Length: 297
Length: 332
Image 1 (spheres, rainbow over the protein chains, first blue to last red):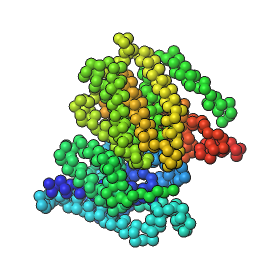
Image 2 (cartoon, rainbow over the protein chains, first blue to last red):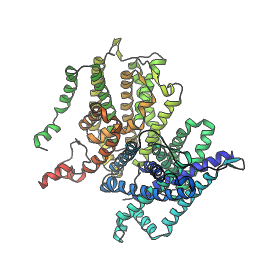
Image 3 (tube, each protein chain N blue to C red):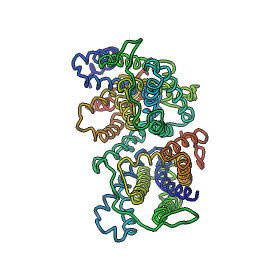
């Protein structure tokens, strides 16, 4: 029981981290960034390449190497996210929403199969693993690296929350989310704000990709697809566009899956998650913490 | 583009000419391989026309369309192998089951706007694939095999030529029917919703019911394409119904021109034939597909062969985004 809860929370923390980027972008420009899950995959591969390039160094100081790689990969993935926004989304800002969604699907394909061209179709093994003795607490087995990764995830989330709510940038982002035209009239460079949002959202996804690579030890070019779906589900459960709700949604989804696959068997895990999504949308389309959306004219 | 070509593209002769070309194609090359490719292309046209009802006519983005394809193929596969029905006899059941599936997924989700629908349909597609992969009745990962071919009243049509012409006729009828739907009262309601859902609602269109109609009509078209697929392959497995398949159908619709039957038929034929012609790039074609999706949306949002506007010139200019080629003409 305690084990199930812990596993659920651990997976849920990753869902939250990826869902935050989704939610952030959605909150600001009302776009479902389909490529978001693939940016997470891209982050995992950037990490793989960087660690391979570093050679033997990471094995001597694994924690320090991990932090360095996290920072570098976040920057690289963030830039990739900005590039995607620039090429595929910005030209269509005035176009119907449907066109934007379609270019998002296109962007997702480009990233997925671009990595496939670069790295080949087979799963790759991660060069860095963190080892540690498993600890037992309240009957749940967990490892120090789980704690470390979860700590990093929580730190990133808290940082993001502070950035959105306390900083000057955050205020601009909230203004653009509320009313783009008015924000522009107030002298906010809307394009710049949107780029920044993409940068931060993608950087978080990239960091999550590295952490998952280090933890599970294996990455492949399609790993972002299902996680993207799950992250969206998490965002919707909590209330998309609402960052606190999104974090909560990730944890709830992780717990649901953990218990669901315990009761029904692992092969039904995804069915369980998406079934729950459909159910939830029919009962409470705004999610657990989401406010009623106001009409945007 | 010159005027004669454009006039020809809008003329009534295009449909019959295209059909005639498709009917004459086996006279040019009739190897079993080419017939197989052409039959697959025709089935793909059927799928694309079905999705066009949902995306093109009504403006609802469905990213799990392969699910209905799967439901149709599996329903007729199970019924014909386990209960000994002929494929034609399974058609009413397939229509009923896909309608039910369409309504089941549409009821809770169609109250929401496009983005939610897109992801939910994506999830629904995954659910169907996982179900097919894990249930006993669908044969698990290896699927169902030994599905009998098509036959009408004891008249077997399962040799490649017979199958091709049967599929061709059925698909032609399906294309025509979809076109009729578009011009019906319901079709006008669909395009109203596509253009401006709030205005449609304000003018008294029951948007929820009308969207549900589009969604379930698309589901039925997809399911019937599934029956044809089962007849052609005589086997179905979960592998055929991955997200890629849904994305390819969407691609055909977008490339051809959302809402335009002619464009979508051409788009579907291109999407299904090009990989056959370029066998070498098979593995990397999805990369190109993604790039083309973006490029089409950015540079030519209406597709290669857009639907002709039925509005009078002045209002049409206001509501339809001007095709890029027209703009460049004015400059030169």
